[in-house]
Image (cartoon, rainbow, N blue to C red; front, side):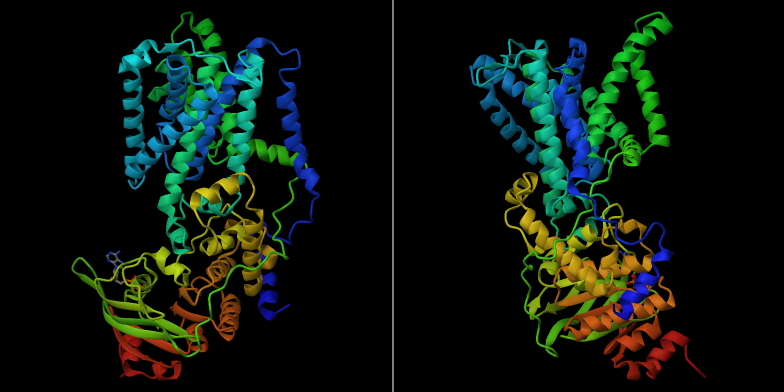
Length: 622
Ligand SMILES: Nc1ncnc2c1ncn2[C@@H]1O[C@H](COP(=O)(O)OP(=O)(O)OP(=O)(O)O)[C@@H](O)[C@H]1O
């Protein structure tokens, strides 16, 4: 064990809830609850279950399918949509119209409906998903209302009366037109939808999707195309809704605009929120609770109040307000916590040691020019934050960027890493002009960064957070990647990514914490985890923004040792730092800024005695 590892292990106690990696659990024990669920679903209609409950289960299955889309889109992707019912409507109307007016087989109309839904969701997503704040929810409301009105206005869709006589489904000569037949189809489709969604979330693309909510800047800096992933999630959510609509039309055998109104769009969102908007099984739970509660209230409340007003809407509204106040994460996390007490735990995700290594970029020749910043200026309105600053980083050296508060260090750092675009000047990396490129493009060229304020995904494990760093080192067409992930055909690639992440964690001495949730780590460990994530990008240049900020003395020593080890392995590092002792013991070259201007540069020894630097830090010594 290296001294760094010894130190990091000794600080475990400082982080609440941390401990040694959990003991391995046999794989079959994790499967037990899933097999029990499957048996329950299969047996439900075979038992002497009353017809009423089969029909209820069918509705719950249909609603849950649309709500899973919202879990993906809203709970995990962070994009609020009220328009899910409109996509259910497209799936339903498409099959109802084509199968009744043109006699097209429902098995073909399913694919036509999915194609139409996919294209409309892509178009809508491309227009609206760049909007932030309240614009997206408003746009989805507008979309939901327009489509509802359109369904009602078009005479060939039966206007507000809708289309009746939708044929029953048949498969391999078996008539699925009865409630029990539809039950197996609906719940089979629902379990398949849950399985592919969970598979997707447990993959390279899934980590990128999980980073959309709250980790966009970090994900872009790791080479993730967040805009494309947003549209992907929007389309996937719409496709799930369209399947629900197709099943709905063939179960009801009639369609009209009412079930696809904005009211239903809001109810789908309620289901996801009540169940647990960030959990796939929460959608099933939420759909079940809302459907059953609504039905029971419809019977119970008129008895209490003595007339038949729609009181259930009021009660459900109040329940939702209380839930948002007292159980924001929904009910699924509580159910899962209860279940965890009695059911055997699933084994933790293991990083396979034997996976083939990912492709590596060539290490630049030591001492050669790597980064050259030439007369870079950044103006924010009238404020010149960085004024014609020039400096360079040679391959294999650690360069420190220092200066008093507000000197322009972070701005310079952001100009180099692509988070900001320079107003003037040039930035060359390995001979290529990169000024103006976005952070994703710069990451692809071999620059990886950490952040002054640690940016991680707290509910993901340390291993998954670090694997996000290797995102851009694999992958071809996004659609193919996603399809392979959904069907779990990506396991070999996934093993390579996780093995790379485990190696990076080993390199920085955090391997023993790889299965912990990143949010439960101490600040020092989180900073080092960020370095492992940056290393996973296979960078030629590592950019560290105040890596020692908030660290205790021993943690700083451990960090300095990690960085020295990296330099010894050929890594080049540019770091912004306030801690002079840390900078002086570590760097080969220092650039000093004040008021946006470079005032000095040289070796640590030269900088310590430089009059302009002493003046800047001490205000002059008499
Ligand atoms: N996005 C922005 N819009 C307007 N002004 C900004 C912006 N970012 C930075 N500034 C200003 O630019 C100047 C330089 O800020 P910068 O954060 O780069 O300094 P710094 O040397 O990193 O400071 P610190 O050590 O406190 O982080 C400051 O006056 C700051 O207020």
